[in-house]
Image (spheres, rainbow, N blue to C red):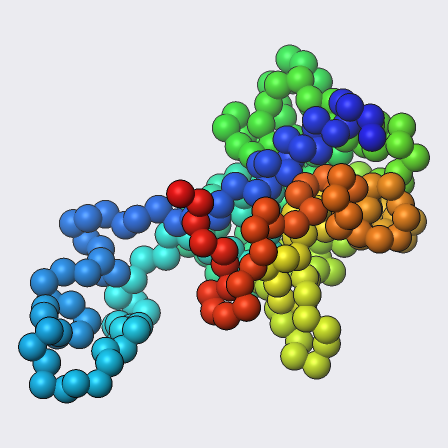
Amino acid sequence: MNNTLFRLLFALLFAFSLPLAGCPADDDDDSSATDDDDATGDDDDSGDDDDSAPDLFVFRTDAPSAYTRVDRAGMPAVATALITSKDDYNAGNPEDDLTDFAGEVIAALDYLHNGVASGDDDDSAGDDDDSAGGGDFPGLDTALGTLSLSVCGASSTHPVVGACVDQALSVNALPDTLTIDLAADAGFPNGRKLSDPVIDVTLAVLLLDLSQESVTTFIDLNGNGTPLEAGDTLGPAANDVAFGTAFPYLADAHE
């Protein structure tokens, strides 16, 4: 793969993979924080007359209005890389995403594809501090073209990146939800398995013309039709330690 393109895509992969973690609420008003009057109503279970094993999980029963949402995530990378007004986005609801945030998604996609020239103060995302950033970034379309990869472009949705938007909508990037059809095969974007290379697939959806290229392009770089071979992927081909066979399936943490 062209070294310049690989570096650009790897940078995108890193940015897209940042944890979508919420910040803790204010300590003075944290409806989800534990305190002396915890949800179990008992600070010390050791003296409980009930010899049965305690519940592993104890859930609060507060009304939803008692909480303040600080983060939300459906499709990977949407909130991280395509949204600039993140606080408003986190406080919003998916049913309003198309109305409230489609413009930001289109601007970010335009930037990823076409970049911004050095000295351009009016960047494509319309903000001096956003995920689409300012500065001299040439965009990825030219580099992808040198690899004979077809990029998504115009459609009736938008004169520059409309086809990319259409592909994003087809996998529920907006509204930002992760759906699951129990009658269909499991695996991203129908749900999400731990082993699914979701960022590589998402990059293909956002960057490539999927009528010409495969959604597995970035996990089958040699094009031999066998995705996720070692050394044949934009990101890691597999977890460094095998997943477990019982919940929560994750491998033990490194020490």
